[in-house]
Length: 461
Image 1: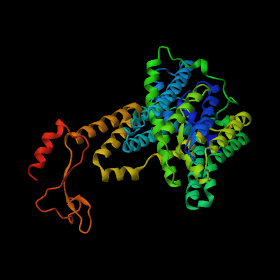
Image 2: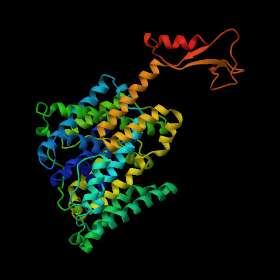
Image 3: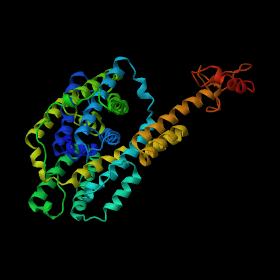
Image 4: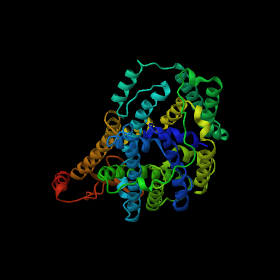
């Protein structure tokens, strides 16, 4: 039930608003990939489907190649091609045991990237929240802010803002109640669905759409046909698609594995990263052939799965079946659903993406990691998604090189009553061994580039 109201909201992040028949295409991502993962996946709790961050990443990068408003057919072709290639890359990572590539995108980089993406996504929802007609496809905060201020001069109806804010408060309130009273966790889980039902009924009863309230209107019911013919592996944009696919594949895998391992640790079992890559890869390959875009593990829906007591991948089959029934029989009921409610559903999920506490913890533990986090955050916020990732990776590699060139050389002492040696700088009570200098070089990369530095540090000791 959490996935149903998000069918349209996640699709809106990808940007094909010019073609109303695409709604089900993005909804298919909650049907086909979960079924494949249920057969091949190893995580018992993870819920597969579209997520906001991957949607934003895919949208921002593909729109730089083809404008969906100008050529929606080519845009969809590129999206499905990117999804197919992303799945192929993910399967390759798993088969050749290249899971270490995901580790280059550090936890600090993910925290900064998610925070920046959350703010950009939030600003883009102002279009639906205010009922604006004109907006920008850019993802940097400056361009979005300019679009908002310029669009405010256009006619807009305050009813959109009232509806959006009312249901945003409702969703956040139910989430607070669900956290405070554990037995009522289901209330926060169904609050997005309740918001859609109540707002749709209210708009229909009051005919608010005739008084300026923006609604979805035409909605394509059922699953979309196969997209096999739309995938182009030898077209003029193949190189661009491959570049985008690599980035999407890594980001999607990073999020899925992080979510899966988090809940696997709680339940006390180990998650095989390489098997997860293969399962995610085949899910996206199959999805690309059936009008889906890049799917991954959703933290919010996985948390609901966990709270509901999910113990196997069958939960993905149940979710896919529920979404399929909704697509076949209930999509036409969303005709009067206000756009402001869809914006409020997305906005309600964004606070969980901005982890200020973790950023502060990174600052206390490692200043260089905090610089990586800050670089990813500012890069996404004021540049683009790929700039943010590029800055984070550049600083990460710089950190590795600096630590290799200038490794820490620690003097060790023995803790009294034990055979444990530790740094005398961190543990002043540790006793040095008489006539023997015990040191530790904090690097596994000893070679000519740091030999002189280590020698200079060791001689004074």
